[in-house]
Image (tube, rainbow, N blue to C red):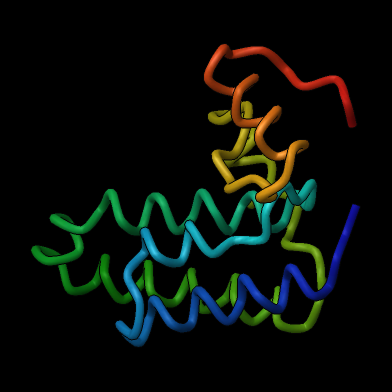
Length: 125
């Protein structure tokens, strides 16, 4: 399911990270809750990798520039409301079975969080 508003929101969050207005953690915590949009999921993983590669980014200017360009590319596509290319989505899907997005702040969100802690797939969707 695609929600253009979710994509626009994530594009703006990525831009805020790139200009150092917010940190990656703040951006991730601000992602749209419980979205099923695979493009948003891929953007989430790209930001997690961006954060994880901080040491490498500090040591290698070319790597930092390429990673910044990659996130900007993702942001531009999401800003247009388009799907990310399949190769990007599939690249993250082969390593991650789920996304640790925030859940809605209601009973359904609580149940999803509870099932995640128990490592049980929520079948209420």
